[in-house]
Length: 613
Image 1 (cartoon, rainbow, N blue to C red):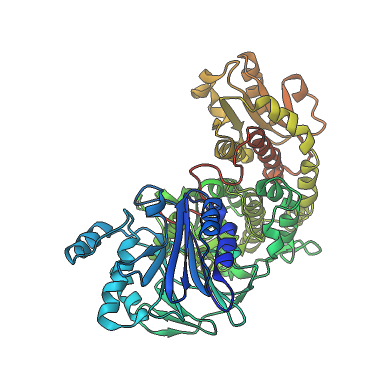
Image 2: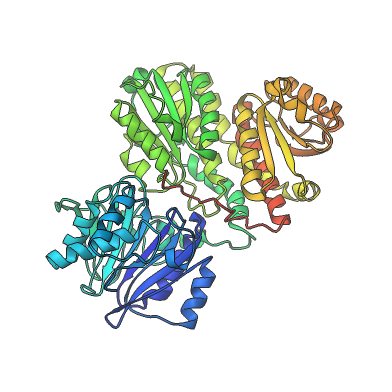
């Protein structure tokens, strides 16, 4: 969740760090700071609040130097204020640390250091790290050794970056466990450290990802990676294809709006090279899957959080109906605590935009320990969830900056559909005609989504009428039931309007008691196998005075008599309809939030990537 940027090279580090932190704002934060080595002395600027406050501080009291580190903090230990903001200096002012994660043995370490005479200047767990580095440097007079020994005292998962005026020619970075991703960027006569790729993409596309319990020594001209035990490692250098322009809003008011409109391209990229329309075949080579392996699968457990879990709920229907494999959807934060029944014939399939979600990574590790095969569907190239999996599917969505996920929801829907078709083919559960028909349907997807986006102007006045609602009830059935959940989540996330989602068939089991003139009901009712059932639910809501909003298929003649407002979507194959029906719900939530004057891209209390439990 916290953002980290570091630079060492011939240029002034300050503007590079500030620009990098700006590119990480999507992660969510409540304070920011930087430390720069200026004339052999570490200068720190930090404050609570947004980056513009840090920028004002730097402008009022400039700092420049060729080595520096910066941080955006999401408070865990200690309230969000200036004294708790990172970076944290040690007692001598010669060592400074930024940190992503939670020091689980913080109280024990603080007491131990306090007994040695250390005075703490913040309430954070992070400050224990810099004092540990100081302790071991005094004994060994070597920064790398001191950092290594300090990190071996920590419990929990961490990304840590350290620099020192005692050894000004290097930055030391490390990763422990599943939290706190660390990316190293390789330049010409300069190098970079970050917690995520967008921070450094303007400067380099050549990156190295640290694995758990690895440490890097970064200088202007070199990069050395070792384990925390000191064993040297030859790192893999990845070339990232993302264009830095893709991280800019361009003509759009917010990143979220831009990313909603990028879904046509993202879905086209998702299909490219994977779908053989001529032969009716799906190719997912990174799964390393053959017919023998596919036939051994007895169960799939999809594990994910939030929006990714809603995608998994649609995926369950695809995998069971097309591939005939029993499939569960397990919220990642619950999976490892319920003693799941997993064995070698089980696939644990993780879905994560960032590939760094702590709960999802922990669920994968639980599956691994119980002997399951691990697959992942991930957007962030080289992320932990991609690297630890036995096989993966890349979403091909490109950078997603807005906290509320959009294109990283529709892309995995297509990925899951393709996976189901591939498994159905390899397992022999599909006839040749069925397989050809399903593959042919995928050709329609980008155009169908584009046609939904073309109707954005029709959604704006509906959003204007509903922007002051206090509550909303979302209903769906079958393959569109998860879209009700996703639509309600989007409204909650960015507009702060309370919204609940239910399977429409559950209305009479309680929720219908809520329906009155002050409870708008949004029903997802395309022409699919559940259409008649949904029409009945809309009629019941209407009869009780509820305002009705309906997602309906173009040409439907019954819905106009029942709905107060209609979101029209094009006719499409019903299995793929969730990719279409979610688009107007994304735009509806976006325009309500925009009209309420809210921070759409960085909603309160939320972060893009939840990297601590």
